[in-house]
Length: 258
Image (tube, rainbow, N blue to C red):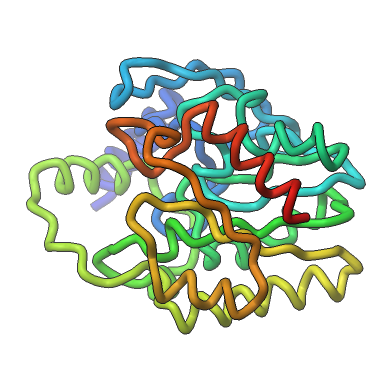
């Protein structure tokens, strides 16, 4: 028993020293609640479009954040997957509304947004734009709210789990990560939290090639800004994310509706 414990402990220490498995851009628990690592300076491959893009983060772990700014919250569509920071709709919006903060985190639904709302408030925004819908409506194997709570996990467990997942056939994804009713409840909770903190809140129904009708109905009920873009302003092989031209057109529409 002692020998086995020493071997496992040695393996765990070795994995931590080697920083393996590599968690890439993210810290936290990638299966539950995560965030971007602070002070990144990375070139990220985007193989779907045979290109790469540059990612830097600040000391708070955001693509960029500034006090007394309009903060753009959302997933990779707000973060700007596939484009550089200056090509995101949030950055373009600064030309219309003044200082903006890009607080988008790839993969986020309203569930993660609620769990990390303190990180958002730490940037001291004067207003926030909630641009959630794409990942909430995304089909998964289980709803986000049923994920186990974040907890430190041994690197050895992550490494073995990765090997198992690599060789396993996952079941079909049939459930939205956040169903439409819970999506509306999460939006209301976010609105209340920011309002109580004295922060102005706007909702944005992010454009989608394949609309999420029930979720978008929840946004309409709450007076969300709606943006419509042609198909060619989404990437050809990744139709979730916007091209630089799409980001610019979106910022223009948001500014006009503001």
